[in-house]
Amino acid sequence: MALDRELGPLLALVGTWEGDQGIDVAFSNTRGEIVETPFRERTTFSPFGPVENGRQVLYGLDYRTAAWRGDEENPFHTEVGYWLWDAADGQLMRCFMIPRGTTVLAGGDAEPDSRLLSMQAHVGSATYGILSNRFLDEFARTTDYEVTVRLGDGTYTYEETTTIVHGRLTDVLNHTDRNTLHRVGEGGPHGEVSRAGGAR
Image (tube, rainbow, N blue to C red; front, top):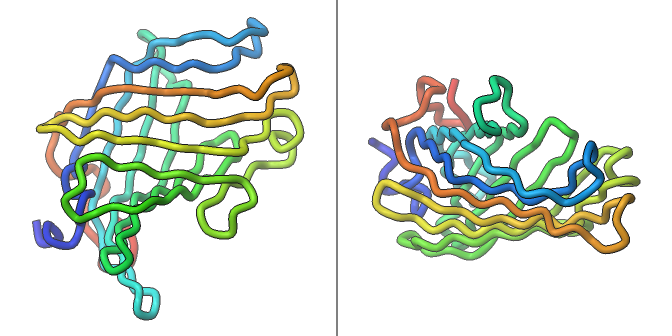
């Protein structure tokens, strides 16, 4: 792959991944309580770059994730976005959107050979922040997000916490997700790699 030297710690994620050991801990609106839900997941990462912003040069991964409970046909969670690597500043970023109307740009320090990746975002931050639609801002406001990823040999494990001020709870909700995924395919499904910011 021509981008091997440019992707830094993201190189280990290129490909298609699946995992069925997921656990989602979240508030169930139908049950009115916090529940723990097992899930299976599929994620694809397709490399791209460079993206040039003046002196800043980014390389990254276009990614798509879907998660299903049990044998259900339609996923209960999807997200699309980018993982980005800024080698000059040693910054790793993950920007994504979920179809409930929430957008997150998380970031953190990393080295080119890092195997433990950590990123955070906070509502109101001018750099690594969180945006929600008006309904969610009033009734289920996301205030913080953090994710830790451990890269293995053909596997990766993540743990993430989304802090939510939920209108039906007296305390803030720490909505957590974790899973271990295994590489099941090389490359990604999005086609030709683009120089200017994404697969075409």
